[in-house]
Image (cartoon, helix red, strand yellow):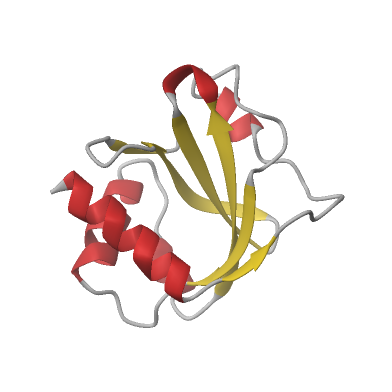
Length: 125
């Protein structure tokens, strides 16, 4: 089930995004990952992408949002809004940290392994 959630969110984001590579002078959100105990997180994002939070949540977004709500985030306030996803690599656990930002504010995110059978956990508020 977690694999399906991860893959579905990844596919949905990939379909609705515009990719930015080699962007300079981006704000740093890696402190949110360090706060969770991952001190070796890379300081520069490996990906920066615009995504649009869907107007209506399908089953995947409902489950993803329920996971985020456990840490005090709620994407339902941002339905239809464009935000930026900053992705940081965490080498010690071979994982990615995805931080969702809207108007400079972190609105959610997750840490997930890069293998198909990895778990996904929400970032802490």
